[in-house]
Image (tube, rainbow, N blue to C red):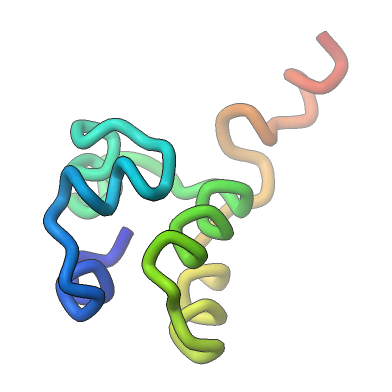
Amino acid sequence: MPRQARERAGLGLREAARKAGLSGGYVTHLEAGDRSLSLTLAKRIAEALELGEDEQAMLYGVAVTDAGRDHPARAAA
């Protein structure tokens, strides 16, 4: 979650995390670049921050389609 977008939305880290259904720690890791952002989470974050089309496109552009729960191996399990 880009910190700038969260701050423009007027949300603190915990509030943004809650709105997106994430933990504050996970958001911290996303903002620091320590975690990959899945497309599924990017969509939840965009909705929580009420991002405009340009910001959504930017966020979706850095998301990966096969991270975490979206990984194809998890679907087969």
